[in-house]
Length: 198
Image 1 (cartoon, rainbow, N blue to C red):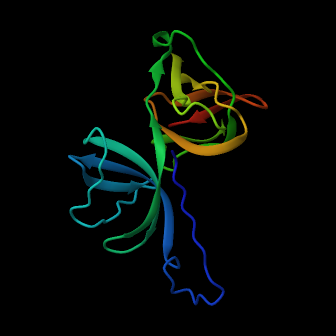
Image 2: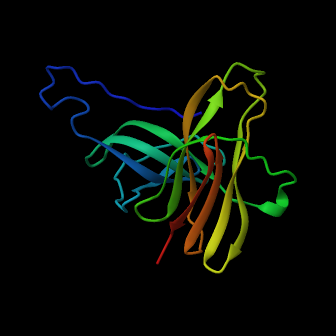
């Protein structure tokens, strides 16, 4: 599901190697008719990319979130990218049964520009029926004043729990000023409030 990128440097690298100028940023990517329209870092920098850059995705007009590895320049040189799974909150009344199978929370943080809430979660994996898949969603339980309440939906789908694999999920910040987030973990309930705007 999530591709990770790594780099190695030999001991004789003088600092002018392939990765010596590499930057790593969380970015928002706008795609129209499979053509990349913009790449904006979480601190608001618009990256210049090669004209005619395409990305095959469904739907063809969409917004993507990447952890992008690149060499700075005009245009940038893309070294690699890891997909962040973009969640769209679902109203709680639309869910017949709220599944909250536990996960591991590695980190949860607001993007620098406060436009996205990012979640680095560990899901338990193991050999199972090839049709069995985890289901992860974000449930909107309601709004009270300036606070929106989210609960992580997770269905383990009877997948054996032999090892943990990490994935990064992201959700666009709501119009409310605060996010109240609840996640069921193997160490109990994770509960935290995040400020979207003052």
